[in-house]
Image (tube, rainbow over all chains, first blue to last red):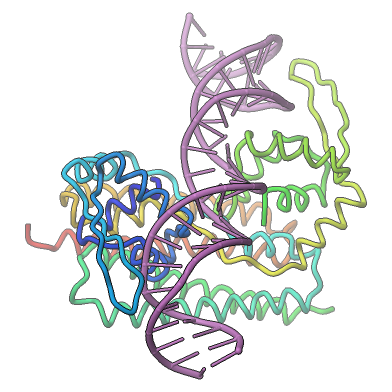
Length: 174
Length: 174
DNA sequence: GAACACATGTAATTTGTTACATGATTAA
DNA sequence: TTAATCATGTAACAAATTACATGTGTTC
């Protein structure tokens, strides 16, 4: 799975500008995919050259011009090639978990701070996704519902485990 | 957090060869970090040049020679620079979740296959980690216990959510 | 005889990030 | 007036993957 595959998928449903795609990465996709502008724009350029998408120039007033990209037949074909390919193992880099793993090399106060911050983040994520879910649930496809449920429940679960861990750490003798 | 930071952390406790580090990435770290040989060996080389680690040549019979790396004082200092730096947001690329998100473009049979495979993987992961936990729990530090608990419970939770999702999909009219 | 575990390393390529450059409008 | 939102793009650089190359011993 490359950024191109994901962009192709997004354009399957709607024509969009690079900026809009970035907004989607930051909202819906944030807990399972992300890419920066420095990836999105060059990828869109490359895809247009290859005939997978076409560009439309939209002049806006008060705002900069937009390049709206639409997927082509060739692009749709390419997307299905991806959709029916083998699923790759997911790849996670969690700095927080690495810190925890090496936690005995840090002082107790610092660890407690790490845990409290992570608890707050997990809480915030699960609440944000829950709100999104309530707002969007009538427009989501069945598999998108599973996707967002996975996000909500995993962050709620994470919060639970972290709170148990925090209690454990706090109960320890110095 | 770079591969260098993680390798430094691993060498804080024990001198090891690149091959051993790879084994650790595949076992203990697998659910929150990973790096290939193509990353590990060049990184070790660079670290030695910078004086963060030292190399020791170990001749083995029947097996190829090993290069055992030990961390230096300079390396320890560098590790603490990392340990006390800001924690970076975790970065996940889940091909499975992306497929789910675009699931309405795939046929129902395929989706069911995806879900069943993911359920099996989640089950396997949580069982593997649970076994590791039972075997190692007396040697694990308190924060390592939180770390592994996070892995066990998150995969068990994932399995639960996926099974609910599968039922939902299977109950749908064609 | 094939494949796998052990063990290291390089090279080509891909992929991605960060920072910079530009510039209008709007809200604090 | 400062920052944020909107909007695109490039360039320098960093990071990482994949494949290749080498070679022994063991297991199937």
